Amino acid sequence: MKTSTTPPESHELSAHATEIRMATFRLARRLRAQRAVDTMSDGQFAVLAALKVHGPHTLGELAERERVTAPSMNRTVGALEEAGLLSRMQADHDRRKVTIDLTPAGLDVVEETVRRRDAWLEEALGELSKADRALLVRAADVMRRLAER
Image (cartoon, rainbow, N blue to C red; front, side, top):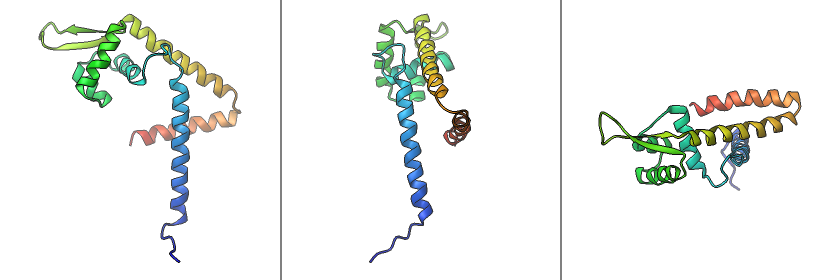
């Protein structure tokens, strides 16, 4: 009979990691469902949100930020441009350089989506006990530190 050489704490740690991963993904999926434009993909929204937070980018910068290829980002930007949510502008100093930025309609989509997500989460948190809300606030801090590793 073969015995396990893995300490019991390792099995427990693995089970905790799985539980936290699954809960995080389920909550993220519920939050992503709260959006201003139902037909918009998560990738498209990520581009709009990046432009709101970080300002205008070139196509290459956006592709690098979102970790996709330039042709893939070009398709995403093209669809968002066609929808009137972002624009491409040639730089005055170098006509070969094109920057991509939000239009007012794109900014509206980002702000409305964030508002809906915050409202959904606020309502859900309101159904929890004060102790559970405090626990989640502490957990959010821990999760933020883990993400920054």
